[in-house]
Image 1 (cartoon, rainbow, N blue to C red):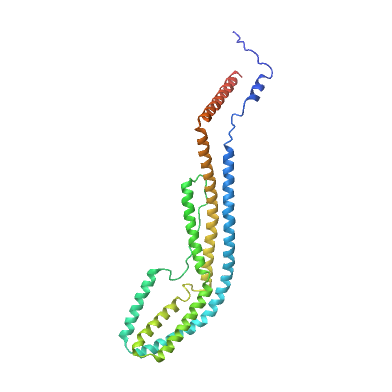
Image 2: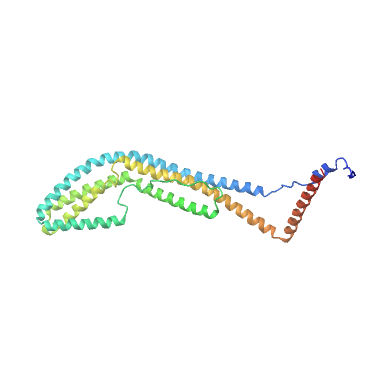
Length: 300
């Protein structure tokens, strides 16, 4: 059998070639990715810090309102009970003075119409905070358009929760004012009834019907003090969850926008003719090195 002659390699020849070749996997674009990740982390931290300051202020207000409302409600309950008794007495006096069931029935029907119109306006009472307030914080592989939409949706929930909180936070003082206003109105109506002529009785009865409406709404839809506190807490918690979620999304947006800008800059640089030539030669060198490595592997 014939033996194929193969020229021996010179000592150190292969290692010298290997040392002179640049790394085939060299890719500095990874630095862009790292930089953009840092931008995302920075943005998330900024949003979180700003939100923490706002939420700390709201937490302080919540703690005060919880204590103040319990006391205000306790004080108001006595006055409300007294006002209901006084209201019933005035209604009976006016019914006797009017002595006309048709007028009383018409006023009652008119009140129902007014109540229906008020109901159409909304905001009649009860808790304004959302029952469920959870947000998706999985931002992996989410496109920018989806991140923008998610940020807008979470922000809307935050605004609703904070509006609810701000609307309720002064309820201890507002409750005291409503009760005082009812008490004053009853006193004025009672005084006016003693001086009223026949033509003024319908107006006075209408005023008492509105006072009755005020007594029904005096607690603003909260059956107990705990119901008010729970609603206020839910609004604050929803705001907290929203800010936590929006911070994650804002960080993802910042990172994605950074990567998008880096890609645009890379493509703009690549389109320059001189850079195109350099890139072509770089790719050619990679292919040539790969071809050499393949040949050497076959020889081995």
